[in-house]
Length: 171
Image 1 (cartoon, rainbow, N blue to C red):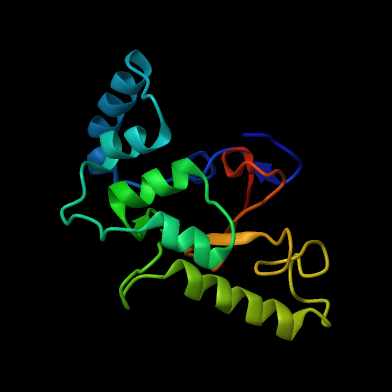
Image 2: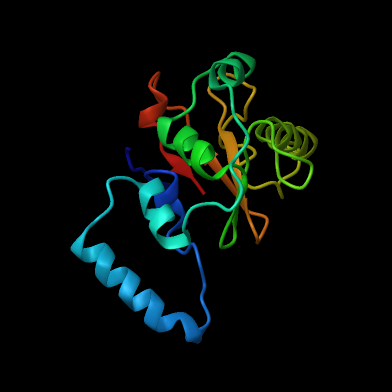
């Protein structure tokens, strides 16, 4: 993944502060990071599995061909792998949206419709962050919201190339 001013490479790497643990878990975390240094994971989802463990409930099946046809564009493999492994959910203060999410979790299409409406309604005002800087999905080459932080910040995929696996993340 490329890096640019204000852009972080990779989906999970943009969420490096995934868990704020109480001091009682400090020995567990120290052991985890020692194991991690000795045997680095192959990818970010493997890192999340090592840190959080396997999900208690299997995620809903996602028909990625249908989702990508609905969106009119492909999505990065690491995002799809994350959703196929964990489904929609929260890692620390980052809530990841997924296609077909239940009413208690954020649906990817619903999140993007909400963001587009906020931007459309606030674009003429100066108080909307990023509103004048870049287009938003479903506009051509618009950034795609995939997660929201507990501070109400958004995480976006930035379609800079035809290959979604090369898209940087904007937070």
